[in-house]
Length: 178
Image 1 (spheres, helix red, strand yellow):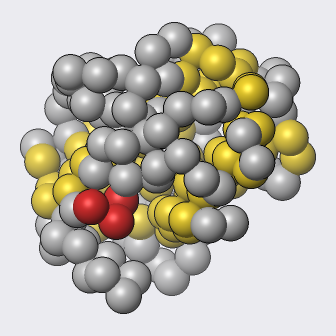
Image 2 (image 1 turned 135 degrees about the vertical axis):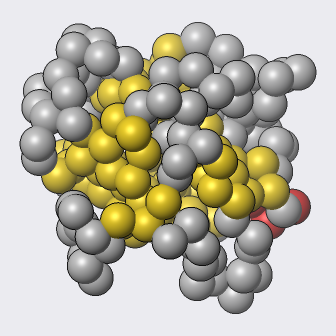
Image 3 (image 1 turned 180 degrees about the horizontal axis):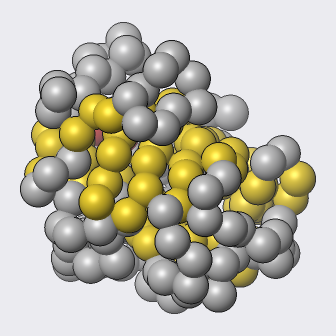
């Protein structure tokens, strides 16, 4: 299926692009997840409540990579016109997770290997942004004064459609104010 459901109170429209689909081949919870085959697939949603803003927020999800030593874009909220108005979360070709704005601001050290599920969370609290992998802070703390105003998110590829994910994402949650 290519019908993705936002279970928040906002019920945003989620658009599947390329061959992004719901799959039962892999899942962390509930028997299915979003599947991306690495050839130009992504999910997107756009609405004012999706802008992370300048306050506290958390973006978290589970992901499963199908290959090592490849850069995959997992989450993107930057626009093409202003790269500091959102964040990007990637699995790097060095098999670690990174967080970026206009440049990489946090690089994790936890080794990510294909064929395993990992919980990734990025949170901003009181001007400090942190990356967590499987519940443990990974990498340095970024002193963050950015206002992340872009209201469009993308899963599985960056804003230009590059670094497409070959793998799965399950249970994305965006929390603002915490």
